[in-house]
Image (cartoon, rainbow, N blue to C red; front, side, top):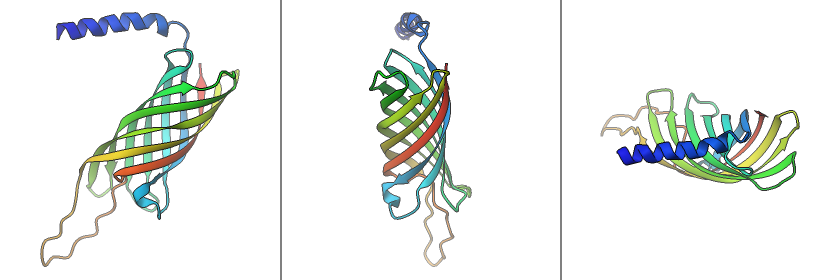
Length: 186
């Protein structure tokens, strides 16, 4: 335990000069649509994101984002938290293609007491416009996979009619999403 604390302290001390090297910090919001492969015949879900990004090197950043997923016509809500590694693929100062990969945790609630937990992994490509004044406008496409770790199920008893049980917001399997966002880079 002592060695782990010492190693963590050493890593922090070594990282401080790079953080003080004026790497950009970006904070923003986004809107999007998410479609699970299992629901390919249905409507896509609406998403809202909040993210924060810090530059680790000149071209590599770490990003944390929170996302809310809502199913149309239901009270079901999903929430995800994702840690991403973002790579700038271009060197143009304003129009920057990006690539990213990450993993995260999921929690869903159907509004009637049913809930689920899970995790996901995703990656994709995007394009950002970075204005000289700090404004960032972005768009990206992502592919991912989700595993549901725990999900409440309803099992009807023999001779008893099953009750209506609203769908949970997150389906296990592959998904795709498209997003647009706006942020401030400082």
